[in-house]
Amino acid sequence: MPPSPATDLPARLLAAWPAAAWSDVHVLVALSGGPDSVALLRALLAAKQQVGGAGKLFAGHVDHSLRGDQSTADAEWLAAECRRLGVPLFIEKANVGEVAEVRGDGMEEAARTTRYAILTRMAETLGARFVALGHHRDDQLETILFRLLRGSGLRGLAGMPATRPLSPSVVAVRPLLGVGRSEIADYLAAIGQASREDETNQDAEVAARNAVRHELLPPIRGRFGKSAEAAILRTAEQAAAAQLFIDEQAAALLAECQMVHERSAAGDTTSVTLQTTPLAEAAPLLISEVLRQAWRTAAWPEQAMTYHWWRQLAQFAQSPENASPLNLPGDIRASRPAPGVLSLRRGTLS
Image (cartoon, rainbow, N blue to C red; front, side, top):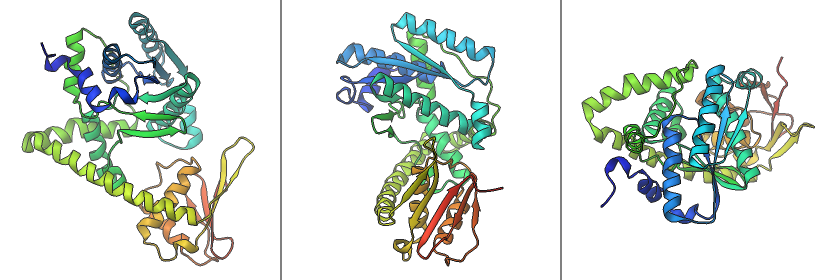
């Protein structure tokens, strides 16, 4: 007898992420305790039982130290559940508030950055090839609309990728992007699996995302039906394809710019220097993407670098060598120290 729609999540996961890609390597499941990550763990366990393979499943939990005793209770509950399921659980605590203060990011961005860094390190320590994330279709829709309203441009419209590298040896994967929130809830109910909810949601970005979820999406669905969701996701696919092409062109152009990094004793990038001659005839959009890639290689925070700032930096990269330095978000200063040279240096603003 075929599985009921409420219990076919493992089959849908395998259709989206074929077993050949992961059954013989280790996988670390990012486990928050919420329904999405718990459903992902249970579906992966069921799929693993079905397909076998030499790889092992692990769970990783990051305690953000934002909810006091509730965070501790979450970790204890997860430990008990993972013992019951026979899944090794690794927990690491991080002071996200301190990270946000040091980096100058919002709390949500600091939590995200810290979480991915810790999960990547966990995976590398365990020898896991993949970090599996529980993002689903509703998350994708909310992300696309949120980024659209924030003015994130083509890159934002592409939404969350199904896979993306976290390090040379670790890849993040989102096998549930084709599954809705209600379907996840139905699956957990069908298998009798509990989960926990985070009731904090005090960060401004979280509040804005909640507004998209509760105030924007329902009337769109009510007025246009399910076809609206399909149209939004189809647009995201097209945006992702276009962005991939632009990224490839930008990477080739960046290679011509002979990028040079300077690093501190701790290994942090303090400056990036580029030759600007290859940028002379390039379109502003492509120059912005070249500079974004250079910025990203330095691992500098991007949240405050809006469309306006990227375009202003692109114009500055083509400005005369005697132009006044440009102060940028993230404590970055751009200067033109010599003909045909652009310097981006961090930690120089007062």
